Length: 279
Length: 234
Image (cartoon, rainbow over all chains, first blue to last red; front, side, top):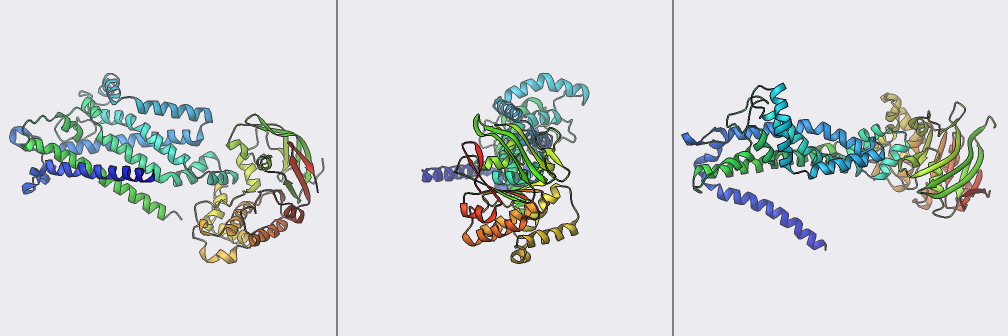
C-alpha cells in the first residue's frame, strides 16, 4: 500500500513537471530571439503585431493579491472562531457553512456579483461600469475564503492536544491559547492555506472574465477594469498554431506557473525561517 | 468548616457522556497535605483530578452536580460559581500530567510562559524566577548552560521536572499531580517523589497514582476510587 502512495506522489510530481515542459515546448517560438521577455513588457495590440501580456500580468497580480488581502483577515478570524473561540455548536455551524460555500460553483458567485455587487460598486465606488479590479477582488475574496478557512482551522486544531491541555492548565484564555500556541504551531498549515488561496485567486478564470472588465489597458488603480492572464487565455482566439498570438497564450501559462512557484517557494522559506527562529 | 480547610467537596457527582463517574462524594481536606487517590485503571481518577481546575470543561460532554470549595488565599470559594474566572482558578491550581508535556519552545520559555500568560513581563524578575523554580526541582544545575535549547530534547525525567517547575512558577495553592511518575525510570521516579514531599510545605497536593508503595511513601491521606466513590484506605 505504501508503495502505491509513493507512486501516486511521484506521479503527481512528474505530472506537474510535464505540464511545465509541455508549455515550454508549445511556446518554443517565443524563446527565439528573446521574444518571451519582450512579451512580458509589451502591451496587447494584435492590430500592430504587439502581443504583449504586461497588462494581464499587472491585472492578475493586482486582483489576486487584493483578493488575498481582503480575504486573509476574515478567513483567519473565522478560523479562530471555528477552532476555539466560539461555543462548540457554533463552531460546527460555522464550519458547515464554510464547507457549503466551498462547494458553490464559481459561476454562481460571478452571476450573483453581476447583479448584486457590480451595481453597488458602480453606485458607491466608481462611476464606470462597475466591472473592475475591486469588484473582481471582492468576489474572489469570498471565493477563496472557504479554502483558506478550512486550511487555517486544520492548522489551528492540528496542534498536539497535550500542548493545548498544558496551556489550558496554566490558565491561558482561549484567545491566549490561539495566539501563543495554536497560531505559531499551526503556522505552516496556515501558510499552505494562503498558498492555496492565492493559487485559486490567480488561477480563477470565470470570475475575472465576468466582473473584472477585461480591459487590455494597464490598470493604474483598483477601480480600473483589467484583464487577468487566465481570462486572457480564455479570450484569445487564435487559429494559427504557429502564430505569435497563439504562442503568447503559452507565455501567459508560463508566467502563471513560474509566478505561483516563486510564491510557494518564498512562503515555504518564510515558514522555514520562522520555525527555525521560534526557539 | 475550619480555618485550615483547603478543599471542601460537597455531594459531588460527575457524569461523563451520561456515564456516572463519581457519585455523592463529600470530603474535607486541610492545607499542606499530600492526598493520594489510587484505584484501578478507568475508574475516573484523572477525571476526578480535572474537576479541581475545571480542565474537564475543555472536552465538554460532562455534567457536574454538587460543589467544590477551594481556599485559594482569600477564603473558601466555590470554583463552579459563575463569577469564578477560569484563568485565575488555573493559575492557583497547578497541574502536572501523566506524560511529560513540555511546550514546543525553549526550557526558559517553558517556565516564563505561564508568567507571560498572567501578564508579568519584567525580564529580570522572570530570569530570577526561572532560576529559582528550576533549582527547586533540582534541574537548574543540569540545564543552566542550555536554557535556550528546545525543552523537548530533555530526558523524560528532566521534562517532568520541568513541567513541575512550570506549574510551580505561579506559586499555586493547590497542586494536582496526575500519575506524574508513570512514564519515568526508577531513578527519575525517586527524585520526583522526594520533590513532591518537599513541596508539601508550599502547597496542598492531590496525587493520583497507581503505585501503592509510592503513595505509602509520600501521602498523608490515601483514598481509593472504586464504584464511583472515594474510600479512605490510609
